[in-house]
Length: 378
Ligand SMILES: NC(=O)c1ccc[n+]([C@@H]2O[C@H](COP(=O)([O-])OP(=O)(O)OC[C@H]3O[C@@H](n4cnc5c(N)ncnc54)[C@H](O)[C@@H]3O)[C@@H](O)[C@H]2O)c1
Image (cartoon, rainbow, N blue to C red; front, top):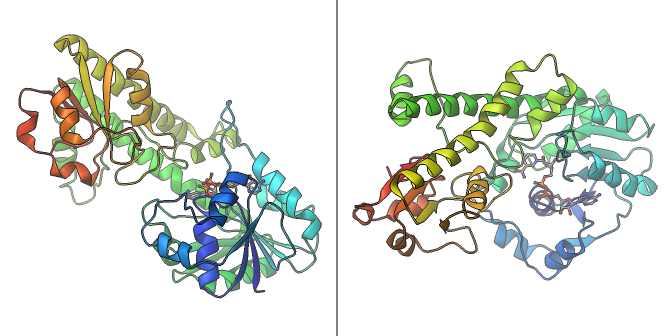
């Protein structure tokens, strides 16, 4: 069980392939995106994560658009939503179709892509004799390599033998605890984790909206409430973004429309928060007759270069249609340097609190209209 084919070389697949190679596996990386394959072949890295550069540079990993025979197939392809907010499993289905000619009895197929409950069992039912397991990823951008190895994992096979084989595989490179379960449970656990995050952020976002509506500081409200020994409210922001939290609860909502009232409400609140922030900014622009606005932070969260489903980026894109908006973000290719942006703007708006903004000279904000939705300006 030494030869692993990693299918999908994105933010999860490529770092996993590198870690596996370093742990002594013989690894081939498969992707359908030729430009990604060419970039990897020419040692151009598309992921910005601590410590990944040296691992990537030292790697001798081979990549291809076609799988070969392997002992283990590890599937890390995207599972986005359709326009109708249904789970789009087309990448997963085409990945399975692609490896099908190479699958033999005793092979182990592990799905890491986030899936609706029951997906692994359903796929496995078409391949008798092949071991199938599901193991979701818990990594956070910015800590990806560390968490890939150190996080506990929930590993569920479609039967006990598949679970054991998958546990044996992960034990060769993971240091976190490996929790045995069934495939369905492992799929449900992943969705429950991101539903938890979405609901908790929604609470912070809702508290923030009504506090601000009556002129209270949301920051102070939450800090004081958190002095209670059993209260731990998260920080609010301009909504919820990223490739997981706004997507994964929808898999549960689609499957269980009657049993997910809270999850549906959380989705509405977090979507609404972005619109609310945008309206507040526009209100400020009109009230103070501002011509130029500087937006601080456009990624979906602080200190990472990920813009997927970023509410801050959506706010920027909408506002720039109507106003002169200066983007200030160290990760945004057209980002304007902090002091240049401040000099030109009459209004400054905090959306994402990157550490890079800590150097900001507070005196340079004198005379500016300040709106802050993410504790950017203190
Ligand atoms: N990025 C994260 O931090 C994270 C965390 C937890 C779970 N996940 C889940 O992991 C899965 C992968 O996410 P990601 O962030 O790595 O996605 P990504 O978009 O960064 O990368 C996916 C890769 O798969 C390739 N691909 C698409 N269809 C393919 C196919 N049929 N065969 C081979 N390659 C194919 C794409 O070209 C791309 O390179 C998703 O289900 C996601 O929800 C991601």
